[in-house]
Figure 1 (cartoon, rainbow, N blue to C red):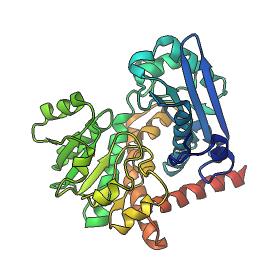
Figure 2 (cartoon, helix red, strand yellow; figure 1 turned 180 degrees about the vertical axis):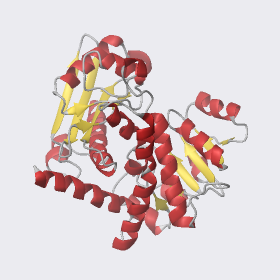
Figure 3 (cartoon, helix red, strand yellow; figure 1 turned 90 degrees about the vertical axis):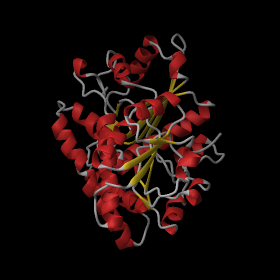
Figure 4 (spheres, one colour; figure 1 turned 90 degrees about the horizontal axis):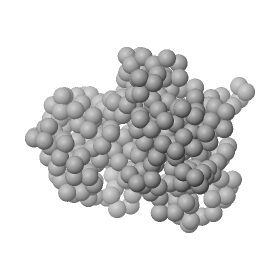
Amino acid sequence: MTDVTGAPADVLHTLFRSDQGGHEQVVLCQDRASGLKAVIAIHSTALGPALGGTRFYPYATEEEAVADALNLARGMSYKNAMAGLDHGGGKAVIIGDPETVKSEGLLLAYGRFVASLGGRYVTACDVGTYVADMDVVARECRWTTGRSPENGGAGDSSVLTAFGVYQGMRASAQHLWGDPSLRDRTVGIAGVGKVGHHLVEHLLKEGARVVVTDVREDAVRRITERHPGVLAVADTGTLIRTAGLDIYAPCALGGALDDDTVPALTARVVCGAANNQLAHPGVEKDLADRGILYAPDYVVNAGGVIQVADELHGFDFERCKAKAAKIYDTTLAIFARAKEDGIPPAAAADRIAEHRMAEARRRT
């Protein structure tokens, strides 16, 4: 079994005794009739009901799924705090290949489990789940966001996720180069799926040069056919070593920044949509030691959660976009705090988020 850092560990040790633990509740869900196996992790409700997406993924083991749920839920507490939302952090994972085992019955069963928590956890889309899936889940659970407009929801949250990452890139450029413009900057994007392909559009519109890669050939082809000027490379290893890269944007799964990738990076900035990009504690210092500016992932990719949170109060896209635009200011504030305290930006963001959660606990 692995803990949230990938090291062998017992899940109970992670929950109750490790620095990465502290979760309020973890629920193991099973519905044999539909084949559902899921984990719902609630890290914190200090700021309000836990809010986070549902990941549908073919984990190699159940233990790996639990570890991922714990890590993702903790990240959502920090993300929601930094986004200024009145929500704590939670996450759910469904074990299995969504291409083969996802069914209406499975999603309905999952919705019943979320509903059984009585609003302590509010769910939404994540890797492997989509708006249509949330419409099904919502038939059993009113604490469901990311639904289609036809069913009272806000639709695809990846639009504002990409917009927020774009704002984080602009803030990074302002901090490092003294100009927020990305014109003539070269940006490498690993993962051009739900979020990545929207990010490509923002960058090209501003005049940036874009290099992409994805494990799915069809995702790359969709980009290059629409934008012949976009360069595609074989894999992430090639992308991070691309000469002249200014910004690297990990937009797939977590753990993108590790002991192998950080020394190989040619980019001066890392700013992407993927969650949990730092493979283990200490990577943020390795980046800083190399002079690479890291925009904390849970800060810049918060546009999506801003959108789904707004859905609970009657969705307004322009209001959400205005909130997501503030990711630019938040990111700059984190860089300033990091410089003032002499710490990496990831540590500065953690301090700010932890302060907000601690203040909320003291008021209760």
